[in-house]
Image (tube, rainbow, N blue to C red; front, side, top):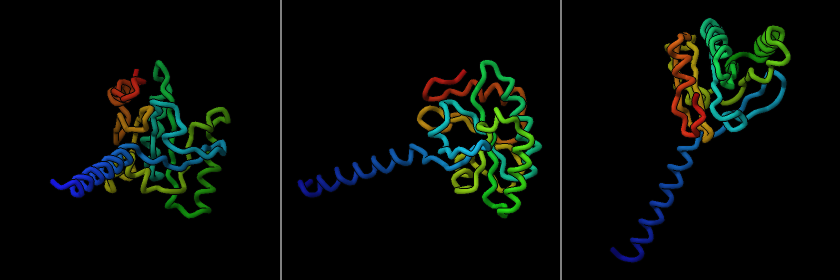
Length: 174
């Protein structure tokens, strides 16, 4: 192999390696806490955070029981309820947020995330399935931001235990 061709191959491999490394590290997704703080997920969340994501009004039937189940976990796991509202008209978003704010105690508002941008990124993160729009999507991320647990559907004792026992790269699993 000629020196010029060899350096091109090495250059191409370096570019491929950089691209794969960037692909392996998920981009942070924008959200705002119910308390009003902008956050980037998963970067601004504690390692091992559990995200309970809903994409529709109907998903509330599964996300609320998930949150209740996770809130009783011992040892406690940092958990966030995520409402993806990007597709809703602005005035509807306002109604939803006001209703949620009334229902959530002030001390818990930073554990509720409102998403109005990049819903496609959130769908990719949780493995969204169009025919399961009303499902709860539950993911757990490790310190590197990688997904180490994923579940779609209603809460069960087994699923809550699996979320806590997930083998996260950072070693932060129960």
